[in-house]
Image 1 (cartoon, one colour):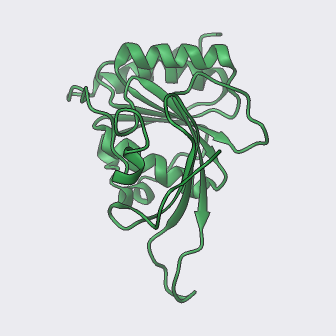
Image 2 (cartoon, helix red, strand yellow):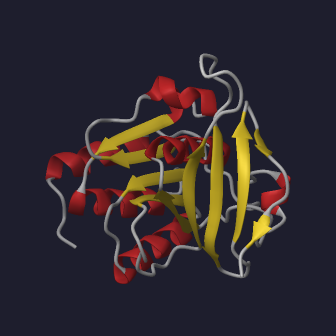
Image 3 (cartoon, rainbow, N blue to C red):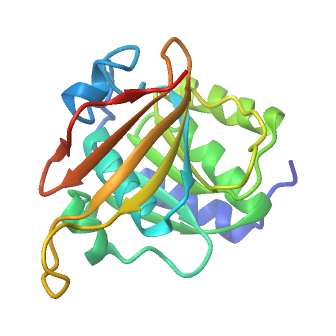
Length: 222
């Protein structure tokens, strides 16, 4: 992996050094009781990476924001321009004051993700990585293990995505919001657990209104 430019190195080190709170350790990050019950450890494991396939980019970004909010502080968001809009993430519980935004793509994004995942002061890392091979995914997973950090990888939803070292793989889609078309209600999403170590796949339709609510029963695949 080619090192990124020195300016990015110094910026990331400076940003990570600002984190004054130690990351939470131990329990997995909860989503909603019916989903947690289907996952090993009753939630998303820390010290691991998890893939979010973006069938709908807005829904996937919102879902990632609420996971990061529950991971603790501070968190790192690595994405090429344009930067995420902090005010748009706040309704999902992510405090912009605790969010470290790193503008990077390609090799720079991979390097920044590995460094942030390895930093004990960081609670969660999200990286937008359109391409991720198995070897690079293993490097990120080992970095997350070393730091005890939650890692989220945003990737496009393509047919037959190649295997990676992620602990879980999800597809995040938007669902129509019930009610009059002129009145915006809470967002509705479809969360598809495509792969998980130690758990079968499943699908949940959910709504977000300050908390994640599962609508109806889960559907297991296969």
